Length: 357
Image (cartoon, rainbow, N blue to C red; front, side, top):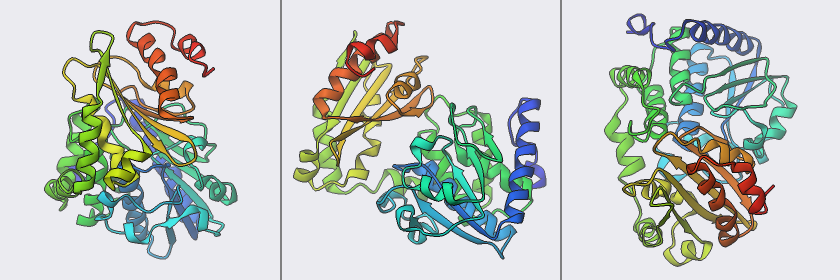
């Protein structure tokens, strides 16, 4: 099966060559290392966790003598909906990890500002490697594969397994399928391409179960979360002739409903579903006097431009940022930038008028 799938990868010949060279460099770093630390981005989603856990299993299968640890960038547990993935219960919070790894591998991120507590571990590491699909990274690494055209970091991880020629176990396949399914919005987002479908087909052939991913991630909501969702749905507002939709959740909402903070991550898709909307914004208050913002685009608008100017990042169609302040302050600052975006105006000047630049 692996030989039959050897052609899975980027279609551009130069991009494929660069990826193969990157794989060789990463494999060489793994070969030389004894202690390897893997870490994904802060507020990890399915791609971050699925890619990290799959990569750990891939390394252990190819190099069973290696000591591999999976880190959490935040001082928080694995989100409940991803705890079904093998190895999730063994992940270590980076803030409590004191090791000095020979190799630090960043997955689904390539920017220091998304490493949170993991950055201290990276600084202690002898070597650094990066596998990511977000543009505009700044992590200095001896080996890196950063492919913004890949639908998910999990796609690249799957192709690394193919490059190594290892057997794709059902557990590895399940973790990667979770990565691909969640970052493509169950293959509904604009990044769903032929490569992602080819990888998903391979993963299912190797024992991954789309229904299990769907059951755990999309069909196992606690009643507390559903009550929170109803509040968020009731607040949805639109402007700019319905092209922009937004909503929010406060810390008081979480207290009243009993929902957990990490459960609110998928609520951006509720806002995104508004008919006629082209850009969606969801804000949630987080501890420390901050607000986490999620942005989505259903059309040609590049929401990452707004996120980057706010110190965040992401892709054209999906991005995020953290704002210091409360919900009202965040809305009054970010909405002008979104209005400028859909009107093809100067986003940076709009942020300046909102007091953010």
